[in-house]
Image (cartoon, rainbow, N blue to C red; front, side, top):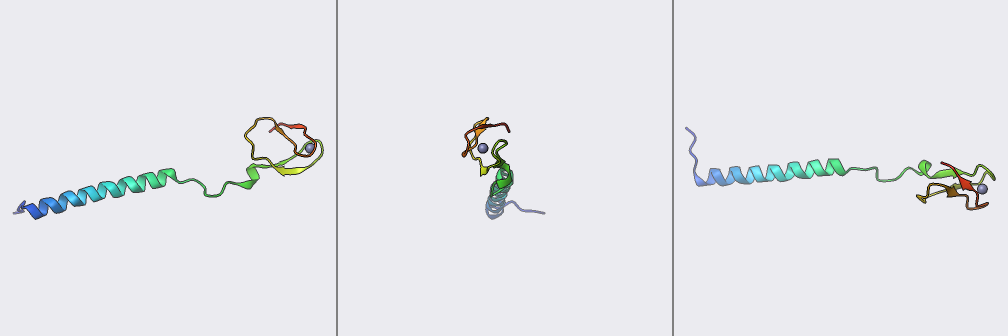
Length: 74
Ligand SMILES: [Zn+2]
């Protein structure tokens, strides 16, 4: 017969709390995972008018070419 003394209750409650904290940590760590380095190909653009190659990190919808200033569609 299993006897519920104080030491068993403390050990079980600490183990349960540790398991919950560990599970929450693993869950949020896996959920938050993003690529560490953004892909440079996403920002690599070529101007349709002058052929200039550049990186466009701006979020503006019609980006402009840094050399000729023409608007670029995405
Ligand atoms: Zn251009």
